[in-house]
Each structure stands twice: as structure tokens, then as C-alpha cells.
Length: 117
Image (tube, rainbow, N blue to C red; front, side, top):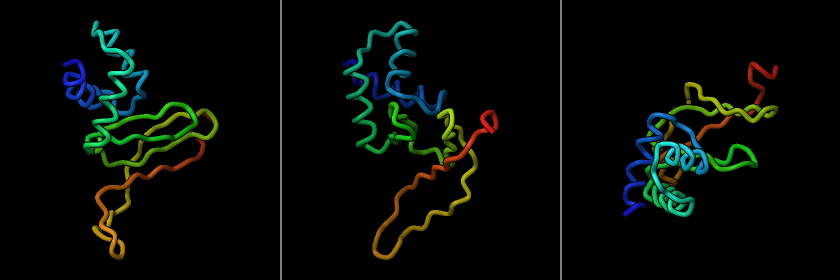
């Protein structure tokens, strides 16, 4: 039952907060008074990734970040401080590349944020 609640609660949270790690998600839920545990959050995240509701990103060697798959933007990762922000994506995704059918894409640009420049 808890994981069923998480299957709806996590996407709702990511609509508000956008890009979060599993530990950040768990902390927010605990701060809100929910009694979810780490294992349940990870299981729910895995299921949401498998059913194409969420995308899992590994921008740095730290924890993976999760976001709703429906977002279309570019991620800007600072190679100095590790911050991740978003920007407008100008890439036009093709339906096919040769015989390969494309269903989504991720664009990540690495550089230095304004604060670190």
C-alpha cells in the first residue's frame, strides 16, 4: 500500500520540485509527516523509471537525480560546483535515425555556472 501511494506521490512532488535525488525525496516526505522508508522510495522510483514516468540522471558521481519524463529542456551542469540548472532545449528530436525509432532524448551541457566563472 505504501508503494502504491508513492507511485502517485513522487510524480506529484516532482511537478513542484523538478529534479530530486532519492534521499531528497525521502527527506521531503518525512518532513511532511509521512512514514515512508528508503527501500520503498527506491522501489517506487525504479517502477516509475521502468514505466517511463520518470527519467534517472547521473550528472555527477553523487546520487542519481529523478525528473518527470515529460519535461523538455537541457540540463546545465557546472563542472566546478556540481550545480544543475535547466535551460531551453533547441534540439529538434527526429522520429527515426536510420532504422532506430526515437522516443525521447536528454541533453546535458557541462561548463561553469555564473557563480563559479
